[in-house]
Image (cartoon, rainbow, N blue to C red; front, side, top):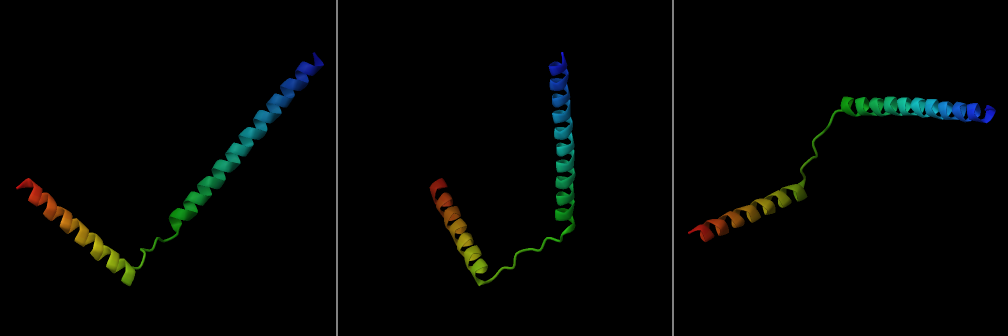
Length: 73
């Protein structure tokens, strides 16, 4: 009978510790999320490589459009 009570106490203590841990973890995650929202987000600067890649992508899209128009004829 005494062992059964000890097991119950251990289970209750384990459940209580787990609940406190989950609560603290959720508070920490909430603070991190709030900190991330408060920081300003800057747009990445487009350098020479960024312009070249954008131009290449635009050329590929244009070529694909022309090929699709040719297939539709």
